[in-house]
Structures are given as C-alpha cells and as structure tokens.
Amino acid sequence: MWRLLEAVFRAAKGFPHDPRITEAEAESSVGGAEQAVMVALNAIGRWWAATYLKPQCLGLGAHVANAGYVVQALPGEGLGSLLCQHSLEAFPRLGSDPCSSNLV
Image 1 (cartoon, rainbow, N blue to C red):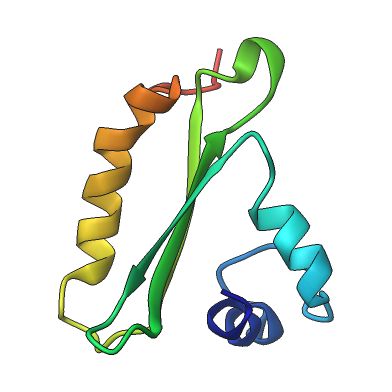
Image 2 (tube, rainbow, N blue to C red; image 1 turned 90 degrees about the vertical axis):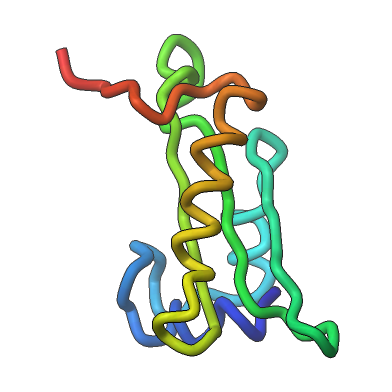
C-alpha cells in the first residue's frame, strides 16, 4: 500500500501527515487495530485504491465514523464514489455511524 500512499503524503495534500513520513510510520497510522483497511486491485493485481474506516475518537466518541481514501485510477471512473458508498454500508457493521456528529 505504501506505493499508493507515498505520493499523496509527499504532496502534503489530502492527509494531515508530515510529508516526510516513513513507510513504517504510515503503516502504523493507517493500519491501526481499531480500524479497517480495504484495498481495490486492478485487473493485473496492482493496488488501485485504498480506504480506511475508523472511529473518529476512542471511548464515548467511538460511534462517530471517520474515513480516508486514496485512489490511483483515472478521474471519472467512479472508483472514489464506490469506496464512499462501501464505507457508508460498512460503518454500521464496524460499530460506527457515518451520520453522527461530534458537535454538541
């Protein structure tokens, strides 16, 4: 997954990580035990997209959902939309609510 994420992290766009993040730091950040990581492969088995789903907070805030996406496909193919739709369907199975807000 590092090949897919590295360019995004280095560009410092879309994720709040330090652009100098190492592969080990990225793996720890994106692949923690409290989250689900999913990938999409293209027809020849190369990484095409990845998403993580996790609680926004731990403890009493764990019901609020958070997700991140990286897509390495041609614009307009709809892969990003499919990942978002999948997240909305997967969040309840993981114990989070994509419609919750942490605003009081």
